[in-house]
Length: 574
Image (cartoon, rainbow, N blue to C red):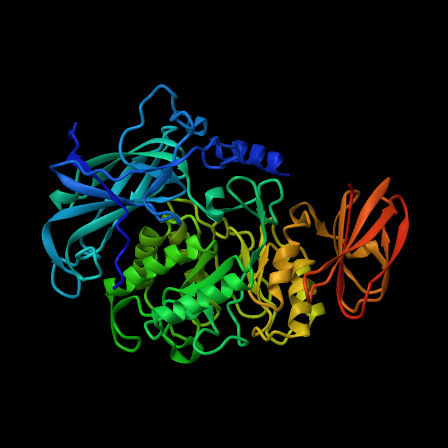
């Protein structure tokens, strides 16, 4: 296995004594009750200081600073505590420095060695480990740990780990608990969060936007439209299907090529299976000891999980959300016992949810062997083991989302059908968006050919008010458009197109997007607006923009596409 860079900060663990962006941020603060999680306050950042310290004695706890500049930490210009922390600025911040939104990894040595392949006691099922984590604002989080064999991918050893998501500046501390192993119980430690993770997730994880709940945002309030391409038949073998990224049949070179392709297409989301037996022609992902056809679901293959860790971090550092899917379709996982399902869910959440870029989907096409009761039972279990409040959903076969009002479903994930027309994609998007005040990911509506029809489907999904999509064509241009249009403020308003063929998103009075699926001429009702408005034409085939001059709001206006084919019209107030 490829080892991590030398970016570890070690401290001593000692036994415990046993006795619009502003509106979005304001609503987030009201909803969550603390500023630190939202990242809504700007920081004054100074230089990075390398921090690598080792104190003698006791057990080691380690943190991996996984940003693009590993092992470094930003500090405020004057070295003071960040004001977002809720901590007195005069209080010294103790312990290794960790970047905000990075992952602090506590490494513990058990009192005995364990056989993680077979034998008793089974460290995956019979050795418990949790930590009570205290954040700078004094909130406490109960975090589950996990067995990690020898710590380097081997299944036998004494290493257990706990991953803490460092989402708030200031002083953090933890104390561990275990009833099964004295070496894991009562260990304490502290770390200091200063500076910010490099890249996209320096703005924090993906959340539901409380001011505009049909959309996603990063924790600092920045809107984000999630765009992936998990079905990509235009790619070469074996990187056509991103769900297979963690497959034991792919090489690291394959994984890198897949990631590079996603980055090159301007995508910000990648779908990855944690368990697959039969989907994609049997390009399996087997998290357990054994192979796809014969495995032990009470023991995990730690060499594979170390690979999952490594590539999960690479996905993050490349700026992509890792949407992890626990169970594939076409794999007969539905009839598997809840105990086996929940063992994977629990281990996967303990190991992966501490990273800023993660979100989770229970399974693909739940109708294949899962009952509604099984979906609800296991999705609720997933949420019960979700200490960092990562977003959770489930995916079904072609049709409506079946769990819009379930509290465990943070977003809705649908497929419109791989042969769906653009009008069908748009209509299903409109209908499902109306089922709940939650984001909708129109995940599956084509196999990923780079053609005109699939491009039109992607724009049809977007203009139906989706919060994201999972496939399409010419997606780099759609991604670019979401950076210039205030989509998070808009709702579907097809009725404002009074003649011609177009799908409309609008914040009436301030911003209008019309996708002219066949080009030509439309009339658009701007009666809610007043004064001069700027007009921009956007070419979804090339990403080029054409200045269309200005129009005056207050009436119906006529617009003609500047060329043949589909075009996107953007009309905004100055």
